Image (cartoon, rainbow, N blue to C red; front, side, top):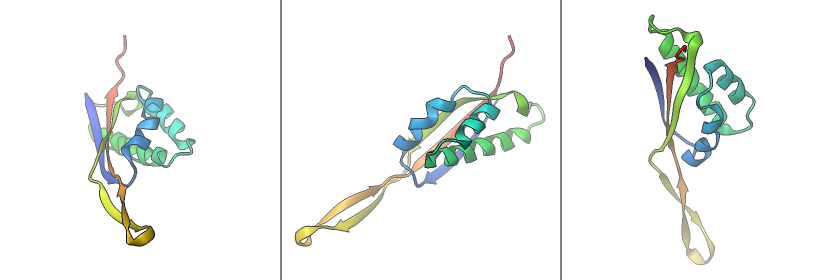
Length: 113
């Protein structure tokens, strides 16, 4: 059984989120939260929030044991880009792209073999 949580329109580029996804993918939830807690990246705090939300979603289902959850997948998709302009020399302007992300966390129960 899988549980998911989605955080949309986060003001961080998906490229920065994808840097830390491999560090927590496949780990038990407790270990992943400990890893994210001590990472010095802004994306770590955002991903931690989504993982906690997914655990809270799993807690609502009586069939799922929260202690055996592992992170099956984390997906950082690109959201809409905010377009801004910055004044430059000689009356010109250059475009600044402020990227956003949609972060999806999928949790599943650990299979005992």
